[in-house]
Length: 231
Length: 186
Image 1 (cartoon, rainbow over the protein chains, first blue to last red):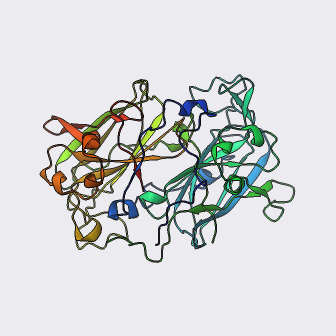
Image 2: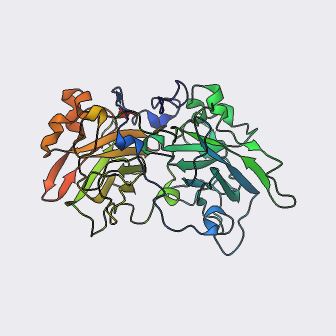
């Protein structure tokens, strides 16, 4: 079978009451299992227009440089058999160094940075590699429970080979003391799966006198070898 | 063998990162087929609207062909049609897409599927993407659709877009509770 169902414990259950917003939003009826037809095995192939260099360098989207710790985040997008997924869209968005999103609804009393929007995108190369330059995001408070703080994270969005390989996730930073008490990260039942969301500090990616480097590989469903399974 | 990367919620503050210009325009004006508007509202288990959801659709063109290398059906692509749409709900929880009615595409075991859209719903409070399908209530081939046949009969109506105008369909999404939309494990 080329598109196996995800192993139990890999993805969080939508019913995860520790994350309060799930309570009224998770379906209560069981999901209906369906076979993989063309509708699931196909999907948008890079649906956007031209990329600019500044799309993947979030520190170069404004007149000045943003405040904060400049970082490089890079990795590979692979399928479950370890094959690279080339030319797939990777989108990211994040808070600024102070832990504030450039979003109209974010009312965290931390400063906005006029030189940082916090959104980027790129397309993987022939070996499935992507690379962003950005600012390390700050932790920020939220109202999930008393004194709740999200660990620093960068949101990722990927498409992969087809509709069924779509992934939205968050990348965390190694050693963040907020990770063990974060209901969003800990909604993932399998400890090893949780660890796959923690980027690795990487001295080889780090550029001397310029920026720390972090590596974050992403594994999506599917195998590009023979995508037609069920026809 | 590497393990899958797990899902996480997209959180409340995504729209500056994920919303695309003209994300609601799935079919260009010159696309083949019957041009329609699909509109709806996303609601939670209390009946409240979600002002912070993202709805994505993926569909074949009017000839029943997906713009994707895995679609090996001998049918024409349409230069004015890509098939992907992405819209964030507004403050009233509403979304809408301008598209065309898709053709019928191949299904499992040699069967043919009724016209449908694949739909993904993402939001704060959703730790994964919810996957559903939109079918058209006035489409006779629904009766033979191999995927609809897997859905308990009493819940199929949640997947049927209602015709509310000559070229206008309504598809409300209920995440939980009475009238809960059928979601799929793909």
